[in-house]
Image (tube, rainbow over all chains, first blue to last red; front, side):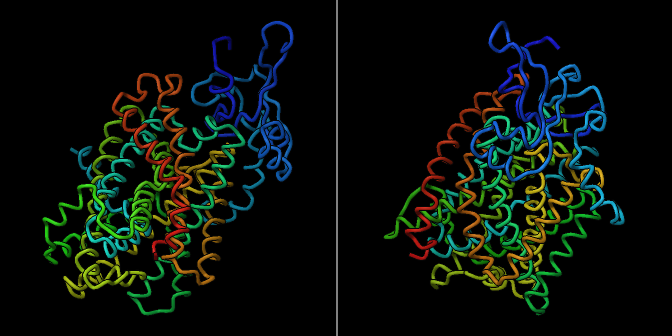
Length: 113
Length: 408
């Protein structure tokens, strides 16, 4: 992954899709290294309510109200970027989409689910 | 040939699905109050929804991203969250109003108690959503909603002065109450351009897996489907203008709306009108309910879609179920659906810019759209409507307050 992408418009807040085509969260924040010396580099995508704290006043409020933990997706796991960010592994392997996994038991007792 | 038929069927469903309780209420009231004078505003509103639904559909077909993805990406987490909360509130109000409208139509058809019919309506919606495939939901409600064409037949049989009707398509204002005129103009624009229509439409485009090959279909759906849907709005306003305006009757009840078809066409007119209202409003209830679930899921990145099995998109499924229950509780309080509709439409106008600005930005982004970015025509109309939307959004609530919801 060395091609050019606009971090603010082309990456932040975009949809994450796993290798099986499952939607598994949004890019809530980015982890950068070498911000002070040399060209900064993205090292990971951060997902989860605690990360929202850094996303403005409303983000701080939402972060305080929501539960959940931060999931760090190393940049090496990114397969390609179009309007969505496609990942190389399954959501389960990357510990993403666990809210849906937890919610499943409320739904799958209903016939036809 | 099969393709042509498919396109035609889709467009028919779009026509039947255009009118919802907001259009019923505002077109009828505007006709009763100002006769044909506000017909031109309906034209402005219909062109607006054509411009933006085409844009949203194109963005969704090319990038596979529906409207609320674009909203969060362009407005950021904080402002995006504001857009989410306000659109969810408006969605819920609209959903509750549509359910109330369904119950009122059912009551006039069956004579059973109103609150029982609210429950019947909600249960019926839940079963249809759970059991029927996406395309069928659209079709069933869209086709049955075409029964509203009875108002077009009725309007012709009422023999309005067609010269006066034609004059209504030329913008003019001839009234001692300009503020009330402005309030209804804002309401008609809001009813025609309700944001849930584009949330639902763009998510549907992604659900049905459209690609750039389907852009012709997208254009046809927007232009013909919404364009002809606008004819139903004309029919409603002309009916009210011919029937109620001379008598000074203000149709504050769904029953009065149906009367607009009964007087020229008799009992069959009444029954068709009520069936049309029932399905048009029921279809809109499903659209708003899904829109709410789509928006939440897209904003937070959850798996979503009617094409997924419920167990594969559990939070999305829970979201629409919870919205139905909340709407049930809200409308069971006995709040008047017509009044709730007016509030929902006026508040939705305030949320319009937060929906349409990000779409205009994304539709111009080559990284997103490749060679399918907005052309000059789409941008000219897009910008023109953005100005209209901003003016309308700023003036909506003040107008509602000073006119006491158009009562003067």
